Image (cartoon, rainbow, N blue to C red):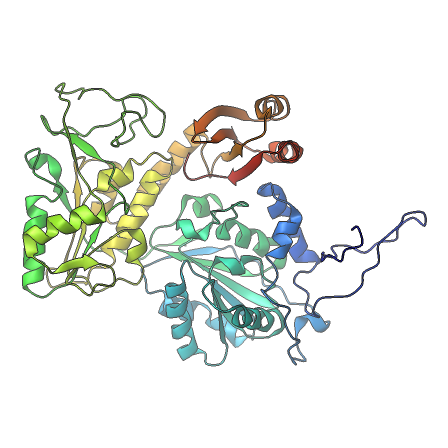
Length: 541
């Protein structure tokens, strides 16, 4: 390497021809392997599946620092091969947070057998809550690893699970590629949350990586969540539903009953806010995003404004965010004035203050009424009232997972409400007969998920089909390369322009061959000076 020292990974040892000049290995960093031959199979799969260099995935097996060698005589890396379990199929336990007690009960058998256990949760707060519960149940066995911790502490947790026995690791998604030692069980909490998938390339998913590793490494897998994901169902995971309703009763507020121009909050919602505040109950008001909400209805007739081509909810722009079709006047009455059904946090705070005064704030303000988005729901419980102001903007968002994601988010909102005592969950909608709303009222997700899976099959969307998005910036001739090398192997859609980027979409029942062909194309584009991002199974199209 031009006289420079550089770090690398040894993935194989073999005899080379005598005439081949090899560079010497000057030293070894640490004494604890970050992967073995079995784990390497999963890493190679991930590199191929996510169209990423193997070296990038190998780096994710390492801790921040070089760990010191723990004095544990029974560590698996000292010659003891990890024992494998019976190969029971993965399970999905449907339930509500906090998950600590259910996780503690689930891991009991593996703990008794002194097997390592790994629990992966979406956020630092949820990791801390689960870890605290497990520490009470199994003292001195729990280690934690999150992105907010100091590198030294993360490295200590890595070394403990890599070499220990009976260790319980609780961490965020970064631990998915770590060495798990003699692991008996991996628990994944709420795999459907966006944070359980890397946003930067390679866009690896915790669920997919864990299921792949379980096949080769022989550990059991249990998922926890309020609503199973379609991906886990497609993997034939055994779903364990509770008896009766999956979530508390949800009340529907039909915006069609309110006169157009009446504002973001319906009269029923205002009355519920006044009552909840008057009796000292806490309230959470959910907005679809921290920016301005996307759903609108006609001021003249109250009809919801939707794209005539694809059915996506309209935004403030004059063209559809999903398909680009231009919006015109209301197809029902010809009106040209449209009222927002939702609002950003700032606007909603002002509207609620007009109803109940200064008893409303954002997360952390310690007010009777909290207005927040999905990220503010983490750790929320014991509400007397939960209110979603704009269900339609969620269910008809411009991506193929909109309905499934909306159902999962609204079920999480319903679970924040205390049982009994007149406590309520209200959702405002202009389309009370849409599938997501009917499912929320019914209290069971199974029929909805089966229907949604059928729709994905008809359109070839994941998890039945596969999608790969390619974004390029700078460079040239990407169209020529993609048409020549990729078009025979997959349906190629594009190009679409977004700011300074060009976006292509590959679709097919199986894109394995396209993945292999795509790698040299990407290398060529980068050599020509282009920035290239590959998003496997993208959520936002």
